[in-house]
Amino acid sequence: MLKVWIDAGHGGKDPGAVANGIQEKDIALKVSLGIKERLEETYEDVQVLLSRSTDVFLELRDRTAKANAAGADVLVSIHCNAGGGKGGFESFRYTSASQNSIKLQETLHKAIMSKLGGIDRGQKSKNLHMVRESRMPAVLTENLFVDVVADADCLKQASVIKTIIEGHVLGIAAYLGLTSKLMEVQPVKPRDINIVSKWAETAWRDMSERGYFDGQRPGSPITREEVAVLLSRIL
Ligand SMILES: [Zn+2]
Image (cartoon, rainbow, N blue to C red; front, side, top):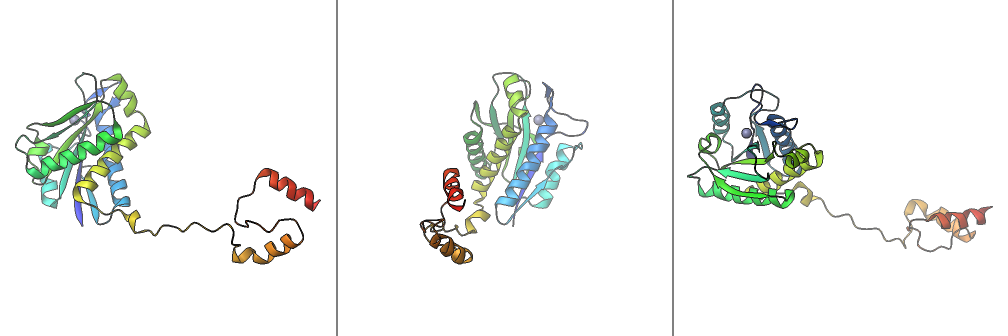
């Protein structure tokens, strides 16, 4: 069982960036809860642990201490950006990041950009607590700008939040090499419309003999005009 640590930035008395009717802490929590739900329902043998699952304040050192103690395999810290500019997405690793952190950032960043589109501000490195103090591969994502009106409008849309969640899920799954639960489901064989279903055999033969149906294609859908012809035959 692989452990993914998702860290929703800010919380409680610390709202993070606030602008255009958006608080960064709320977006970070929504995205984090979504990642846990989607990752666990879609993939085998993965558990998602959260720094917070409600609107509470946590010190940075407590977040990394908990993730390290849990022995998480990767850590992703979820944030939104502020500070103007044209908006867009960027990600951060530690300035002296491990090869695995670099690989995680590369995989995650590409997956999110492929889903989200828009401005790519790049894969960056910075001396940030969350990526410095985490013992496992760690990346911090800055998901659009709350103080850029176009980005804020995006963050207000459920479909965009879903896209951000999907990007993170795909990236984490690709990095960890997770197996999709869906791959184990056998594809359903399409039915042959020329073969009548067992339960309808008698009625189909009977009604065809009486001339209501022509005895052809018993499994085919019926149109409104075919129903009209059928009704006129009956009447
Ligand atoms: Zn933040």
